Image 1 (cartoon, one colour):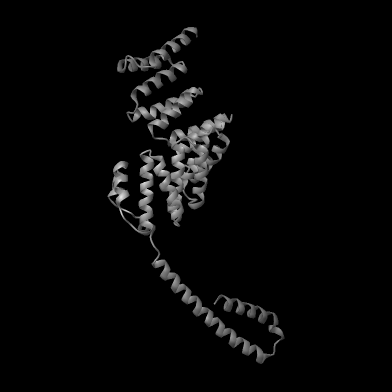
Image 2 (cartoon, helix red, strand yellow):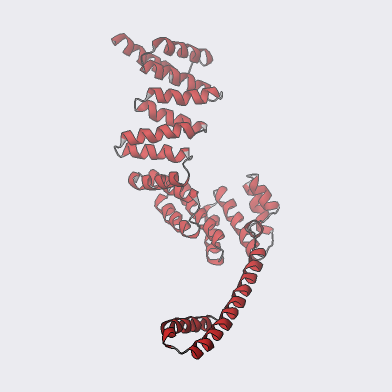
Length: 321
């Protein structure tokens, strides 16, 4: 059919070029032939449209293709990975569902820190599957295993391969940034964190690590702008505490106080917040506020590990000033 269509397209082009030079009788013959061709092409495209509609109606749903549920996957979702491994080893499936079973099994080994078995399963599945989504998650698993073993160059290799199979996965871009950050390749990390933010400008973690990288590269102003963005977006206790420590270490005491206020409002990390308030208000020379928070801290924990040292250091500064 493709040759038929191409041949007739060429004939129409020739007809157009020679039309004015043909006698009326010949033009009428060619016009009748052209009308028949037009009807044939119309019938052909109607058939194509019907087939297209059929294929759309019968398109497999990703949720159906990748929906594998079993006792093993239930234990996996409950993060009971030893039990998940035991059941997944015994379960029987076919086709894509069996590949999904093997994928769950490989990740169960990984989360149980059974790296040899996990690697064997991932590599076997990598050779077995033709499915691009399963291949993506298999490579992702190999990358995660390399990260757990602090082999960041190896992790970068697998994450880069993972991008080829499912380019729209934002987690891969972010994790590439993290691997380069942990490798102290800050210039490379910056590129991936910028890309992660371009894909999702509400990613507080990406802003946080971008800021850290830029500061390491000497771009302090841009780095602190990124950390300022992170402050508004971060919610986890660990991230907010980490951000507070970086800010106060770099003399950004007002911004550090904002981190502690965000934590304290939610009733999290009371001792860390009280110490943070006392220290940063002290560094801003707001002595009454600082002393008030030190008092609250020592009432809550008289033997706070760093509270006494912080108070003594600030007191010596206040005396000198």
